[in-house]
Length: 209
Image 1 (tube, rainbow, N blue to C red):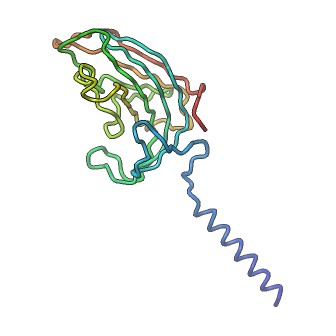
Image 2: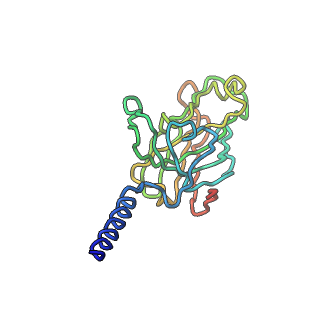
């Protein structure tokens, strides 16, 4: 009888351990770091949880016509929102998102009137050929000519976040990506500069993990 009790105890412990293992969060990132501070509030206002997998800082400064482009930071993140945004942004609650965020500061290098420049001028191409035409509206900042003309009326700096949701790539596997910035155009639709293409190599990861 004592042997039977011992066997029952062993089987019970095994079952409890199995439940704990099966009940664990299988989506918990193995190589990502929980984002607890973020300049654009990503996942730190109680609306979701995001993990940073890779990041690069101080990529470089570029120019297209009257606009200087300072690419300060790029990060690869994965996470989800607690609330449903599907009606407007096609993102459901707890839906996993793999995203590349670009933190870019724009400045005018000369006075320019009657030009158009906004987030639709920014595109992404990943190393597996996935093309994303414009940043995700829910995650990205708004950019337009008036922000550049009157920065003090909008913020102390023209630093903005432009986020691209990947559907054919993921946070662990992405190795390179190219952000493409079309030049501003005048009132006749004519370009005022050259297209910028900036490749970022995540093998040079600087993420604080």
